[in-house]
Image (tube, rainbow, N blue to C red; front, top):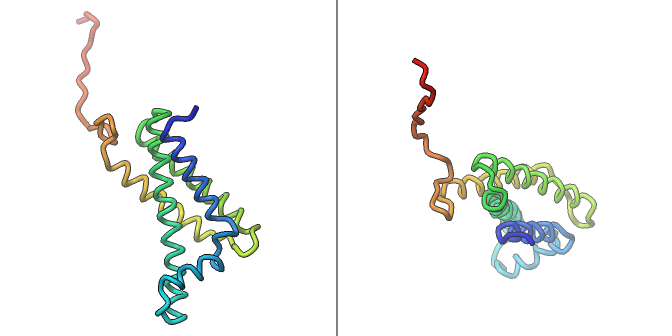
Length: 156
């Protein structure tokens, strides 16, 4: 079966893709946000709603990037830089699939800007996780300690 970090990444991915469905379009989330801030004027509300939706894109993919990085680092045992690139590639692929899917969902529209925003979120998530120590106490990147080369042959 899948290891826990991989399961978490896959579950979060499923949530992200579910949030890209028709159930979470602007027409569905607008009334919810409106109930939370009924005192806002219409123009302020539209701007706030748009910002909330874009911030949610960023945060969803920041978490996804961090989870993929952790999954690749712990399960596949990639080097930190390889795991980071693999996590970013996975998030980019997910963002493209999600936005392409949204172009075919009534009430939603896919956007290349959202792919860029999702990718930036993933990059921030990966950078935050990479800057921390791994659970085994090893730094995210190997230290740049000098290597001593010892010759074992006896030729003079």
